[in-house]
Amino acid sequence: MIKLVNLTKKYGNLLAVNNLNLEIKKGEIFGFLGPNGAGKTTTIKMICGLVSITKGEVYIDGINLEKKPIEYKKKFAYIPDKPFIFEKLRGIEYLEFIANLYDVNKNKFKELFDKYVKLFEMENYLNDFIESYSHGMSQKLLIIDSLIHSPDVFILDEPMVGLDPRSIRLLKEEFKRLAENGTTIFMSTHSIDIAEDVCTTVGIIDKGQIIEIGSLKEIKEKNKSEKLEEIFFKLTEENE
Figure 1: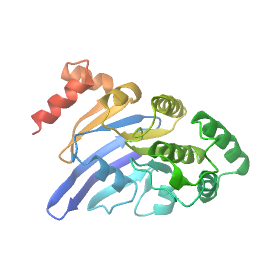
Figure 2: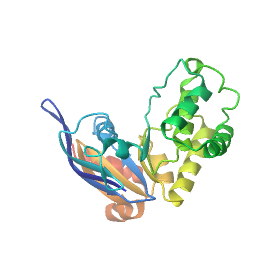
Figure 3: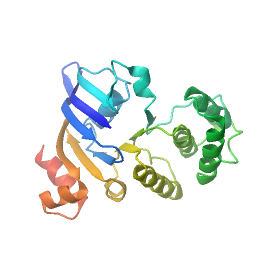
Figure 4: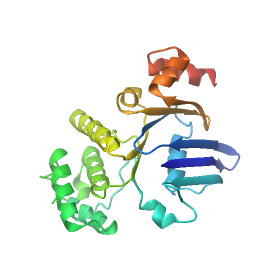
């Protein structure tokens, strides 16, 4: 569903992402782990078309980003770690705007709106201006707007930041349910516990290169450890 081919990004003389090759299948929850500065966010921004690609290609569902950018971008939802939303809109106006942008059927919108607004306990805040929201509330609004247009792929950069424990649990459960129904999820996270709890496959990146990839079972068997945290520190320290 997601395919990266020789993906490379340079900022001047800095090689941020180095010839990345990666394929994530339909229905996978892929955890993207790495230390600060490893290239996680740069990779995600290239996948989303937010920064230019120095070299290489990106595909979602066989659609090339550079050749068919509009068709490509309709396939995914992106949730960053810092929610940037139109703050002068009310919450309800923002959700309606996103639904119109993605041509969501009115009946489908109402069904998903009712479901997710209630699930994330946002009913009492949707008539407030977004500028009055806390970070956590803004993050929940972003999550709801992404779920409402039912994308084939979710691309997430630290999606749990700012969420309360209940919302984190609900979001993890929803991701698992979506994946079981064929949605592909690409999630960058610093939380190894979340990756171990939610993800079906994991990739560890350091210095712009993948240093380990596979299912949790494969990675643990290969590295002879039952703890992903131990494997992560061992591999990234060896790569120093």
